[in-house]
Length: 282
Image (cartoon, rainbow, N blue to C red):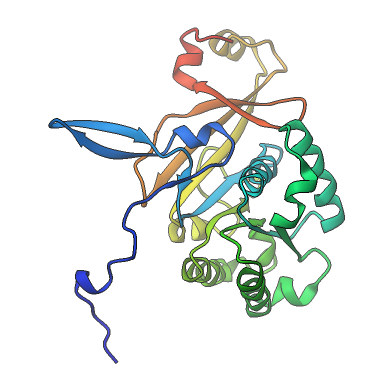
């Protein structure tokens, strides 16, 4: 069997990476390089890179699930099918949260219900403990429903009792998602001892090393006068940040950005942290 290829033999039908909108400010943080009259120009992709498998990680209550829900609803409202693998939030509760989020986004939920295909792993031990069983189910759903995007919230639940196997389990799902040409965001959870600003999560750097890129969400509680003065926020406030830690498929903004979670539960990415500290609009 031939195990090597010339580049001409592996050229895909399209070698241009496009943007898959998330409905958040992330859409302007990935870009491509174009050369115009001999000068370099950054052109926003308008979304995450097509066919990318991205890791979204952060400590608890940083907005990870909110972001992937916003992504799923944005794609579904545009007519694209989304496979949503829920490992922590039972399907009936996921329905309620997605419906509420759609109302906040001014989206007609009834028109997109059939565009989100859910696999509920929360109470199915076979799917949760057996990667092959889950992948077979996902493959059937992708082929039958012709999904273009996948969310796994969270992938950590698939190895939470066997973190030594995290790398091999993540690799199986990464290869699967690539094979089926899915644009995917997988959520990974951090352990209490892991730094909020790092790409490390449960299972170490297993997810970050394998996937195409990592997005880190973090939060800081303003606890003292120095922090209050530096960030110009009252004590007791929460400063939320988001950063693209790396992406092999497309150039991206490397700054740490601040964001808010609106009262309706939407992710609102506002400005680079550096601008905020220097006196940017509050």
